Image 1 (cartoon, rainbow, N blue to C red):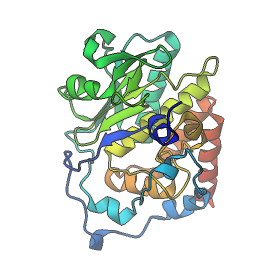
Image 2 (tube, helix red, strand yellow):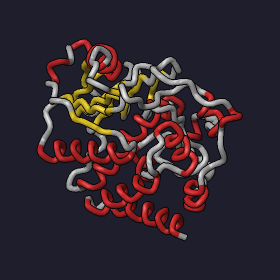
Image 3 (tube, one colour):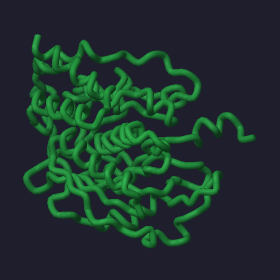
Length: 302
């Protein structure tokens, strides 16, 4: 039996990353230029659900994070879409079944709404692109790919036209280093690239739960690319996670603070985004997300 201390770190980490702030970015405003929050963010703040005390095994139990205020966010250099770089790209790697192909297309649609940026899916790449030295057999007999290899040897040299973020999606399980069991995803925010695995997101005969998990993981990782740290203020899609149980308990919604951060550089129409998210959740029978969007819509109408 593995030591408990090792287990805490080895079970799952949804976002291992390179957080160096040297990514292609634009100068951020000074504190004197920061305006008070718009009424929209004040109105929806009432729907934020404060995080409870972390339990053993939770992300915040083993990771003592300080969070990120709005002022801290605007003072760091982070990626902001420009006219030259404003498209999110998804790169499928592997052989996907029909349901997985459908999920990837739904992820594309969702990310396009979530970030209010055009999102495209590139042509599939074969698993043969991963050499034997970057593969292994996991503890359950499953084949695993070294996540870092996908970042440095597959994605880093890719330069899609007008790309602001590039995320690979693989149907194979991932591991970040030999001593770890597996990882949901890995990202280099400096290079604006990431990889997420569908392998552990899938639940047989439950398409919607699998999709919900994938939407959370992909929006979370790309949110990091745009400068969002782990949220410790409220139940939020930017919460860190140590397991699928914890992921399932996290909201698919960005809390009001994280929404304000994201919108500060993107300048999209918040109400338009909210209505489009409501429509997406309704059309895809994602009832939890739909209920959350409806609650926000009620508050902005009052």
